[in-house]
Image (spheres, rainbow, N blue to C red):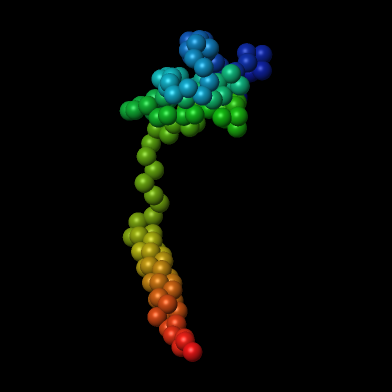
Length: 122
């Protein structure tokens, strides 16, 4: 559910003050705990350290991020993967297939170099 148009987007005033003090594209990271803060056009080019509950994750604001929240780009949980034994078997089969393909390419690349005939000089 989005915020009311009458109220406008939530933008933390202290965060905007920090943004206005710095210049865009600098190496300075603005640390913040305000995950609900909306990214505005004034924030483009700045790097934010968004807290995810344990650490600060660096988020560089770009034009495509305008209108989104800072917290959307700082995940709070670590995704390991889906599946159990079956998924693991599929991944090992794919890895074996890939290594076999690489080996085949190596042998094809080595054959022409070894089979070049020597030319006689007259």
